[in-house]
Length: 347
Ligand code: NAD
Image 1: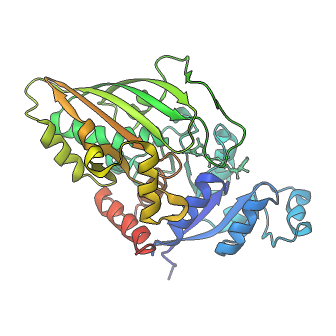
Image 2: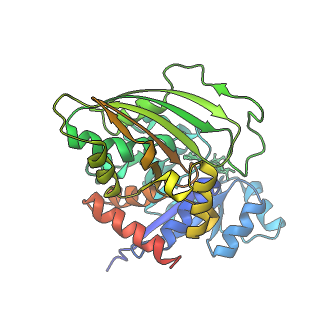
Image 3: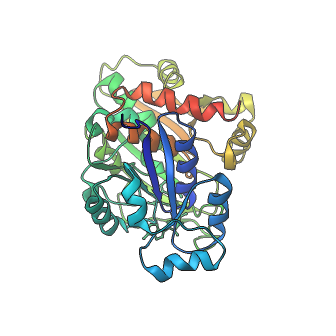
């Protein structure tokens, strides 16, 4: 009888790849069969410590042997890893997708890309609350970016409650990830001079019914993004500020807290709260909405939310695996299973 555990490979063991690997390995229906690094570097030590078989991103003999020369047990190249995998999670830096996709297709494995790739390259995108069913049994998909995931978590239930939605928002973006020394700005506020920015419209790749535009600006912080959102509800929507807050409180992967009552008034305290939860790297998979920053005025809903850029997409990758492998069609059931397994690690 075939082993029903889904065999998952990670191509690109960086910021996102190492997190997805841990999230996969704590689920009872899937396992990590290998992770790749481009060359022997400090990230290899983490893979070894976690017990993940280490492979080279490339198939060139000299690149593979460089790992052995540096003292790592490298099991082979990408082709060797693909031969044993059911699905590969591509966590390479953005825009390498087209080349990698061909390799996955040649090997006959399913594939998931991340938000740094364009929807046009994959032809399908994924967010659990928006379009899990559309991804069932597909060959491959793209888990949308951290910003698009965050927008979807609050906008999709709002759309479903009122039947139409028009949104203007501004992404106040972290300049770089904490482990990244190459990006900036470090003493400036940098508007994205492509208007509208791609972030808002990207929501329409998973929920085309939401009419949305965005602006973006990068600020000198590394820990979170903040979204400033104005959503226009249709006439006769029947919602109140309180009913919207209640709806979000019942939405998976959304945390709603009162800033003034809790003292969590900035992203610094949100991240401290996340570190107190105790997940690895101080991750916060949930979107954080300030309850006292939500207000419905006539048909316009104003609110702020904060996004932990390195981690909100991590559980989405797990649910996308189940959709592509066709093992769970109910998105809420998948989300509950994913989150329970991750939470059990930190009880
Ligand atoms: P990263 O630079 O931290 O990690 C990328 C890893 O891929 C590195 O280990 C790198 O060595 C490796 N790599 C390089 N070339 C490769 C290749 N040809 N094939 C496979 N692997 C290769 O990047 P990241 O932040 O983890 O981003 C990965 C993807 O996730 C990108 O699409 C990015 O846009 C997206 N994403 C990033 C964040 C974030 O905040 N970091 C959030 C959401 C989505």
